[in-house]
Amino acid sequence: MKLGPLQPATLTHRNHFEFGYNGVPFSERNSADDEWFVRYGACERMPHSFYEECLKTARLIRESTTLPIDVLFSGGVDSEVALRAFLDAGIEVRVLSLRFARGLNAHDIEWVERVCSGLGVKARYVDLDLERFWETDAYDYAARTQCVSPQLVSTMWLADQTDGYCVLGSGENFIVKRLEESYIPGESPYLRSIWDLFEKEKIASWYRHFLLQNRDAAPGFFQFTPEIMLSWFLDEMGCDLWNDRIEGNRNSVSSKLPF
Image 1: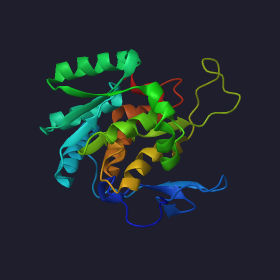
Image 2: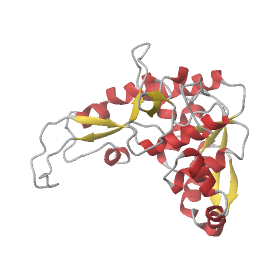
Image 3: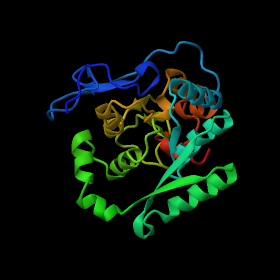
C-alpha cells in the first residue's frame, strides 16, 4: 500500500506534524534521491511549563478518542514520562509492555515492574519470541513501513496486539550542537554555536505503521502538539542546553538522564 497526500489517520493534534519526501506530506521514499522533509504546525497559544504541557497533551489525547488508551511502556524514561502524564492528569490508561522469550529484555521488565509498582498500576505483558519473529513477520513489518530499526518493528507488532488507542513515549526534540571538525571533547574550547533540530527519518516508520492501517494513535507523545515541543525549548534545562551553559554537551540525549 502506497501512502500519498490523502487525509491520513490523526497521529498528532490536527496532524500538525507532517513528514514525507519531495514536499509531499505522508509519502514514502521511492529512491535514494528523494528528499526527506518535516514540517510542524504553529503554536495556538503561549506554552505553559513542560510538565503542564505534558498533562495538557494527555488530556487532549483523552478527548480525541473514545477508545481505551494503551501506553506502550518499554521501561525507559521517555515512556515513563508519558505514562506519568496521564496518571498525574487523572486519566485511566492501560499499560502494555513487550516481554521477550528467554529473558532477552529482563532488565527492561525489571524497570517496568519497579515503575508500575511505585505508580500503583499494573502492566499487561505480551510475550514475543524475538528470534522466531525475525524468521517470520519482522521483514514484512519493515518492508511495509520502510523501517531500518529492529527495535521499532517489534513495537509495531506490540501495537497490533491491542485494539486500543496506542501512545508511544517518543517524539522528543533532538537537538545537536554545531561543532568544528577539529573539536576534541575535554580539550577544545566550548564556544557558543548554533544548535540544529533533527527529526530522525527512521522514526517516521512508527507513524507510517498507523497510517497504513488508517488507525488513530499518538506515535510521538512529545510532539503531539506544537506547544509541548516549544515548552521543552523554553524549559530551564532546555535553555541552558541550547545557550551552551552545560559545558561539553553536544546533543540533547546526553542531557536527558542526568537532569
